[in-house]
Image (cartoon, rainbow over all chains, first blue to last red; front, side, top):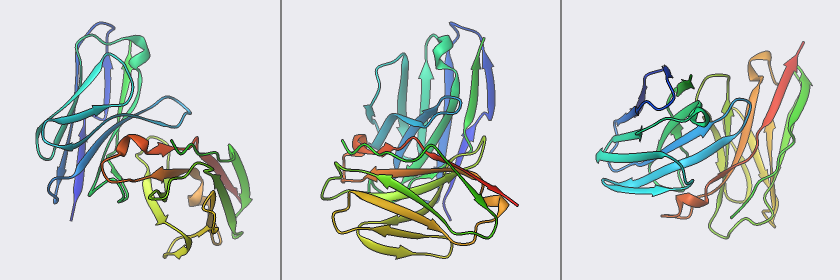
Length: 112
Length: 112
C-alpha cells in the first residue's frame, strides 16, 4: 500500500534562517506531488506541485522553493524565513490530477 | 478557475443526517468534485469523489445536479467523531493541477 511521510512534525525557526522540509512517498511511481500551506483557521493554499522529477510549478510568489530530486521525494525550502512563513505545511500525492490526493501528517512551522 | 463556496459552519446532533453544499458555478467540463475531511493538526483525508449524478460509498453520498454547479455531501447518522472541517475541491484536468481549488471549508460540530 502507498504511504506518505513528512518530517519534522513541528519546527521552530528564527527569522532569516533557512528551511528544508522533506516529503517522501512509498508504494507508487511517478506520482503527482503537492505542497500546501494552511494558516491557522484557514483553508489550504497550494504552493507547489510536480508531475515529474525536476518539474515544479509554483502557484504563489514567495520566498519558498520546491525541488523533486527523486521520483518520490519532494522538498520545500527557503533561504531566509519570514514571520509570514509560519503555518501548517502539508505534502500530498496523487496518481494524477484527477485522482484524490493523499496527505501527510503535516509540519507545523513557527517562526520566531 | 473553479472557485468554490461552502457554509462556514454547521451544527448537528448525533444521529442526524448532515448535508453540506458546495457551490462551484465555474466548474469546467473535465473537472471532478472531491470532498475531504480534516481533523485539527492532521492532513485532510479523502471522503468521496464524483463527476455527475450520485456517488455513494461506505461513509458518505455525493449528490451532483445535472448542471454540476453545486454538489452536496451527505453524511448519514453523524457521530461525535465526525466533528471536523469538510473541504470541497474542484478540478483535475490532467496536467492542470494549478486549477485545483480547495474551498474555505465547512466546520461541522456534532453534539449529543
